[in-house]
Length: 221
Ligand SMILES: Nc1nc2c(ncn2[C@@H]2O[C@H](COP(=O)(O)OP(=O)(O)OP(=O)(O)O)[C@@H](O)[C@H]2O)c(=O)[nH]1
Ligand SMILES: [Mg+2]
Image 1 (tube, helix red, strand yellow):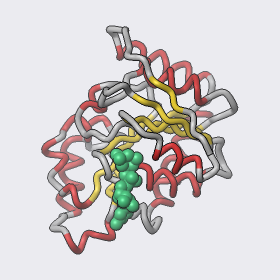
Image 2: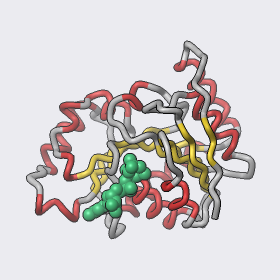
Image 3: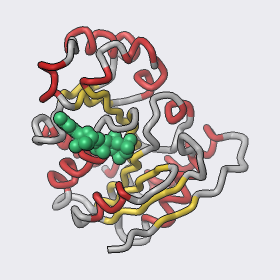
Image 4: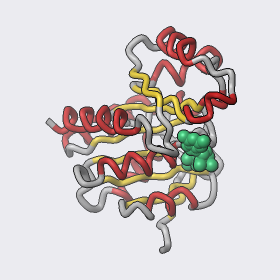
């Protein structure tokens, strides 16, 4: 099956924060919840989304925007789950801003999508600096990356409403200290929800799906 690919235009707007607020307000009026999912490359964003979609696709009309510098492999994987998926090419940029997100949403929300998900470009630094207009921010830290990452990439952890700790199945092979990791995340962001998961087996994904479903219902109320 062919996947729609949108070549994003670089934003010409100075004030990203204002444009992000405006987009968030419009999405709220239209009762569309937008989740911005971020992480380092390979932490498990696409795998987690596939498992989350399986849990929620009967409840919501889900649409996914897969942002990458090149390729359409992730959009194809998501399209295989049966939900609407488009690929966004960032033209070399390592993040999406609010205007680029709006370009993607315009292409995605032609139907009646009520849960839109943006898989941001794999990067722990730049995506944290640009508000996309999302209703909530989520990030994944995977066990092989190490429990010290909240100390080294403070902004990403401080702007996320939920942190998923993925690949807990390989914990025995790494000196990953779960308690220290939780402590460091809460040092950056005391309100962050922390959910350990294994996207590969689905362990813990139900907890994340419940969290997400609660957020969507609250947004749409
Ligand atoms: N062992 C294990 N492997 C996992 C888990 N989740 C994902 N992986 C593997 O990690 C690799 C990367 O997963 P993806 O889901 O593609 O990661 P991503 O964050 O979407 O990657 P980019 O889009 O390239 O940034 C794949 O080989 C997955 O099978 C997990 O819970 N456990
Ligand atoms: Mg991916």
